[in-house]
Length: 372
Length: 242
Image (tube, rainbow over all chains, first blue to last red; front, top):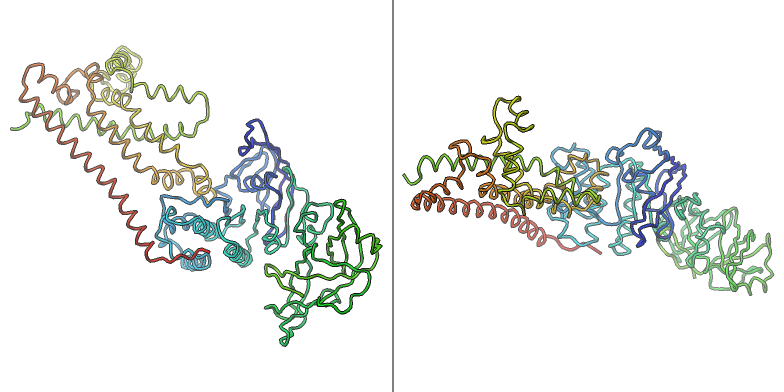
């Protein structure tokens, strides 16, 4: 869907030194539909990347294609206003002279009565779901920061753009409000088949929403792939972060109403979690923090921890003088475990060795489930 | 009658001149002010100085140069004569041109200040939403700078009515063509006809006050309406933010 090779430089406006130019060289071929996370620390070029795609910034040179349409090459440059993109900026950027309703309908021409009935239905649904229906006659300055960001989201969604760009949106909303809004974005884009690029520096949000990610560093794309795969790659920074995680795919096998538990299949191994609201055979994603993983070379007996899985050590990397990262393969899926170097030596762990792992808790999508 | 036919003629002519000048100035100043507000160049200071020149230059100096430039033997005067068969100096058209130059900074500056306050981030947002540059200007820029347009119009209009030095130099005091109020008033004072001068001056003062009150009430009205609309919305809404 999105193919680009864009390079150039720009004066870094955020930097105090005026002579500090930011160089970028983005190469990407992205066919993933749905939400793609754009991940990187601040100052690595995430916003620049979105601005180049939107056409608000023109790359010095390069090529940009969306679904086969040329947005930029040596001869052509399609203006931002012609790209039919939805863009939710870090700040809400509302039009202060217009009411909330006029703000939201701006991309549709501005007048409710000129909309077709099906568009009116869509707009009404967005009003309800984003939670702006009670403020339609107000002006932006009469809203709180979080309310303004909701309006900005509604304004982008009602246009049913062919590509949605989210640049660290909803920072003024509380965690819960943010997550429910992001979940609505996910269901909206799925329903209307809108690919979405989602810039965030919160790996929690990314793991909860995106299945695919693009990693940026110093103005280049260093990796792209399934989030589950990227988080366990030892050559990338994600696995070395303090809050590093593994994401495992599992399917629902049964529910145990007596103990309020759900049985999940992970390959031919079983994992019990607190009962979840999911149908049998539905696939779910388990999130395990690498610091929560307990590794042993004997099969665990008699403990309060419900689950243990069997796997094979596939990689070992010393990260600090005291710590190592183990990559353990379980039926083709990878689990990251962070243990001390002392334990590694005491257990005599070697590559290809069979180990047993236990974990105190697993997360499921955005919901954390206790497992003890 | 309260005002003499000469007074009425001058009054009509003055308002016609102020109206035409203000409308033309708004047409020219809007793009000019927009351009200046978005232009990042060392040359900008030079352009701004040239536009601001009528603010500090004695009107007679301006009038003198305009007389030279608009004279029948000047390039501009000759071209205009060949084109229309009329002279520029000592004509209503010449007076309009002179008034426009004289009042230019009073219209450009409020607009430029207002435009500079408009955040390009907001305009970018409108661009992404598919708005053409024309729509961005009419739907975002103009509504949020309405008061400055009003101010610019009032200043341009009032300043044109009050001009004296420039029209004295290039007007020629022709009744119905270039004899504006300030010149008639000057003539009355010269001929020591203080009664006529009082009548004319008082009429002008009253009219100016009434006009300004109307304009400022209109302006206040729009502001009040917005506040009321906001308040009523506020009372019916419970906070849903988390």
